[in-house]
Length: 350
Image 1 (cartoon, helix red, strand yellow):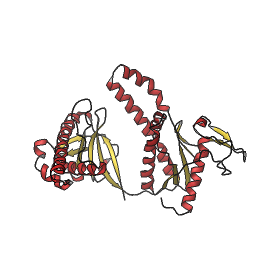
Image 2 (cartoon, one colour):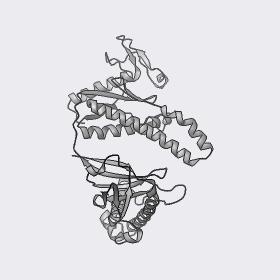
Image 3 (tube, helix red, strand yellow):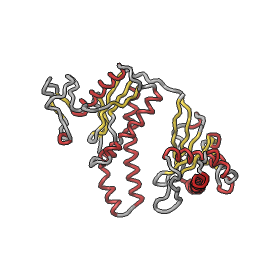
Image 4 (cartoon, one colour):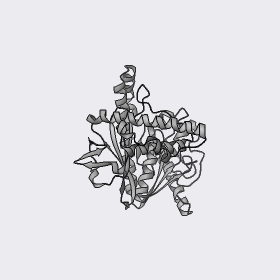
């Protein structure tokens, strides 16, 4: 059994109601933020999520929130404070240019599907049910708002693990011009979202904030759609997937930041990791050092291979040792695949 988060959109007519609840959530968050900080400063003790319940008990009716939501806010606050190792977290802002996007947590037994609608806190909320939620038992979740003011219902459910029948293995090389290329020659094209760059620039110069948000959302959705389809195809067809360990966090600090962010390497790795986990497919990150320079046929680093940043424009090359002709990215993906097989053969756990 595995858990998975399902996300469906809430109909726009409920936005006003959800915004009011989100403001109350922000009020509670800020209250326990200040309370916790004072407690640490004056008594030298951290309040746990259970401790915070005693300070918010009974406030749900006045704030228009479910009592379980108050408890979950406290537990979430304690978790994030520990995660970021801070005595005080950022305020949640309900207005202004830097307004926090809406968030309303709930417990599994406090949200139910009735007559095709979500029943929560005494209200029926219509959703576009693309998953047929009646087939699932809700565990926990939240309502969340995106940058365009649209609301979503996110819920954790339990699924049976589906074992895939794929028997092949594949290596993946991550890049900028091509976001991802695998050892079979398939991949995801990078930089194609820049077709909307001119429209985005026009909207930004015109200070049309609504249009800017819409274009950003379109770019995001196109990228996610391409990465979801590609990762699903790989998981369905393979028993083992190996990907290079290139770090997007390091490269976003360089001149290649725009291309790196366009590619969405982190998103692809996350998608592959959880989909492989659900399907029982092996997933590993492999040290890709010299994978571009090494010939995937003779395993030698010849003088003719592309080396350094000055050779980034070389997309095809011929091995001076064995005469094999290579596509730069496919050759790197094949080397990553070979290294992945060596790790499995050596018994190194993934």
